[in-house]
Image 1 (tube, helix red, strand yellow):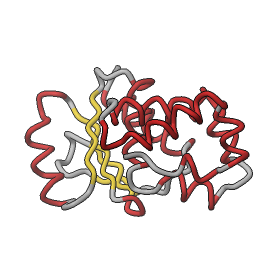
Image 2 (cartoon, helix red, strand yellow; image 1 turned 180 degrees about the vertical axis):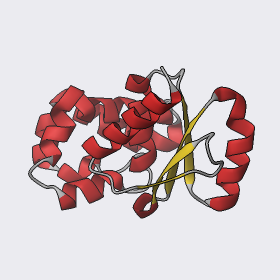
Image 3 (cartoon, one colour; image 1 turned 120 degrees about the vertical axis):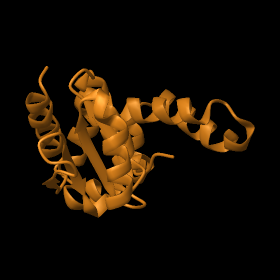
Length: 161
């Protein structure tokens, strides 16, 4: 896939997620950044060889932002979830639930995102004792099914550690 196509596809993903963003370039004609100011996220579309140069520039221009790098060689189906997890760490799902309440359940249902959120949380907590209650809570939610959990407590899906 080309860098131009990857840039376009990431824009489509962000549009589907209803995320407001601006487009910029920290190094002209080499990279594109999608800057999501509301969530402090900068997504850089890169050629792998330019990673260090672009990372340094992004860190300089977007201090304290979460940075995500996507190259034309990456699998966008997988990177789509990295985008969602990064946004979730900054409150995206709560914003989505409050901004688009009628569409929120549909987005969680699409591709079983609700189940994937639970799975990702369990993966991140890695059965560590300090997360025992949260692990138990998510395992119970997984057993009851994300749709039932959604009807019981929609805010359950608001955050990603």
